[in-house]
Image 1: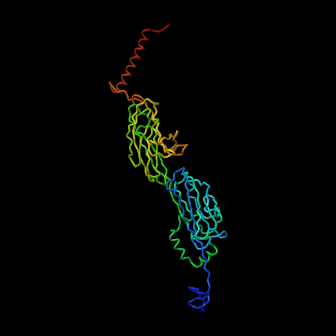
Image 2: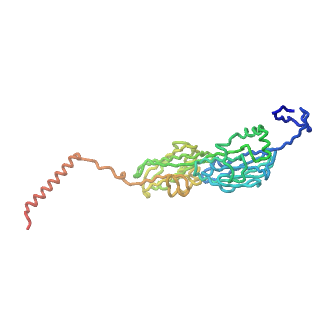
Image 3: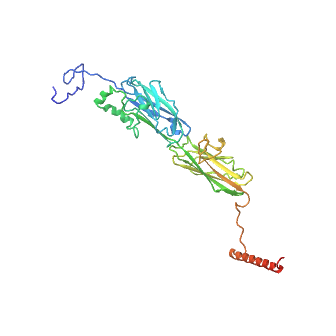
Length: 397
């Protein structure tokens, strides 16, 4: 008998109904418990831009020894909070195979259903990028620490991120307490907080254009243009998914000649010209910029207005030979109002002859102060002569 106040120790083994160490009778039941692991992928996210459709796939696998059932189902939550400020959910989630149920209540998507040991369910859905937020699309799928029936009553995701590494989580499962193991028999939907995260940034291009002249130019002048493209987003433009911009010179070349001197003065990429378009294409890292420069010589002969707009095309261009987009009609605060893409423009007036306003005539003769006194004296002499003339005529009757 065990000493008073001490709990009996269970046998290490039970062989054919007896504890081999003490010879006392025993018996046991081995219960296989279910357990979930989560994996999440989004290949589209590494190259997504505004307007793109991004697909997500979340895989949940029962890698335990027991089954999740209809009465004690598995639950998966995918939280889209940090995605929906930059994208719109397309309401197209489905589970494959088609088991259980899928529900959505912004910002959470939930799958719940039976899942036998060794089986996997894949939850797929898409969003369309709008780019209206912080341009970072962080997305977390997780197994909640308690039951939830649908998206409306499921908890928020763990913060600030998945709490443990997946490898650490799997090894930890072998060290759980006997009490926790016993409770799992009755609450198999309770998990260890398994989760998976996808985090990606969206690039954003800003364009700035400047000219060496600010308002008006005259025939024979050389005007130098400089364009700077800056990636102000949270993701990079890459060689596989480059940025591009087009500078359309249609409104300039009727009054000027292109000097064929385009160059990249900062950054990399490819710069080509094929009248009337100059096209740049290439990678830009987060926070990095590319600057290009070229010039024209004013000739006149056109509408006497040199209007020039640089813009990001709807369909990216690699060089000027395969790029024929139309420039935007307007550029408001750096954005094409119709396409929502970046742009910038420079408008110059072409004035024939001398520079606008003309040079001042050269001063000759006496200084200005002396000339003023001479003018005043002449006026006084004229007034005196007029008075003398009236005096000689005498009074009128």
